[in-house]
Image 1 (cartoon, helix red, strand yellow):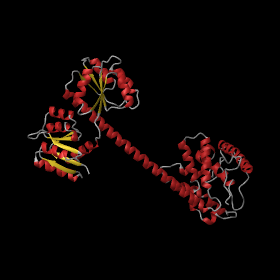
Image 2 (cartoon, rainbow, N blue to C red):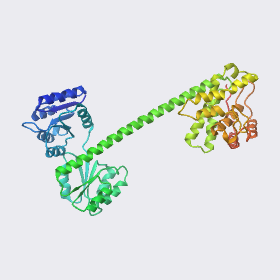
Image 3 (cartoon, rainbow, N blue to C red):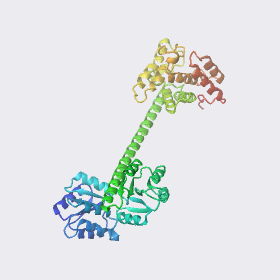
Image 4 (cartoon, rainbow, N blue to C red):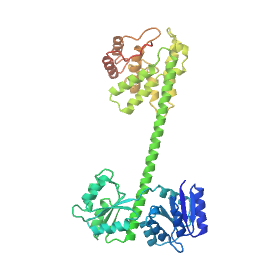
Length: 465
């Protein structure tokens, strides 16, 4: 549990802040004066200090200044609760490292949100100062050093070398430098990995409008004229960094949600695969003589699709359509499917109905609309003499033409109750004979290539031991 110290001389406001924090799950410690607050800090264990600016005896700014000068508590995270305080106070507070200002009266939701953001801050922002004048570097470091971690370099070349080692949160860049000016350095910086989004603020003594235009065209966030006023510079830098951190936070949230959506999609896709394999198992289990038929047809269909030059997504569509091409057999009685002898005409009509039944089952899966195609038309013939309808030639969906060839190949190369798997040369002869009549000639040619390459006849059902 995070521990927060609230320092305010107004007892009512102190109690209100204490109540809000405790309701939100924070351990809360209070003090009614700056001196008491410092003593509480020295006791240790404080994760965040909420400090009123205007207090009698010792102001919030004086309290924060003493905190920064006291080694044991110098790194304390501080937010100001303020109903007053001028711009000069706020600027000094920023210089001293205050993380935020919450206006009184305090709105609970806003206060808790700001506290959460402050507690997430785990380091000082790094400011890279690029200026060839030693005095300018010294003064800039003195102004920003308490609030930020300031790193100084004397040229664009040194700055580019620094960026290869480390990425600052913001760059304060002199316009006029001897080895390369600020614009040239910025141009090279944008070509470096992970550097294009680092905000740049130019420091320049020029009052030339054309230079100002060039600076903003180059992508700078702002420019500050030399000699700059410390309060103005601090406010501008703080504003830019607050915006940067907000954008980074939003991007992190977007990345997080995107990752969650991808993971959710992966799980759904994996579940879909598992369901399809389960359905395939149920289909093949109905026929004692065609175990593994659906998986083999899917494998052959996938290889055909690859040889046809299909995209990975198209290959996947073909594979799953082939995997479920016989799903309609779920609705056919087992005694018909497993009948060892010749089917009657009535039984044959029932078997033929598995194509339409399978299509009706699969067309309900709206996310995979092509699944039903293989089920519906895998028994059509290229010459139009197949079933369930008279589609022919190019009118037959391509997926169905692929599955048709793969299905017939596996039927011939698998064991049946009345025969063994046919010899490879017989299977090849039947495929070749069917080109242009039963099969799409181009797809049949690819299947013949696969057969010719399968010199050990591995592409068939394996006999059970």
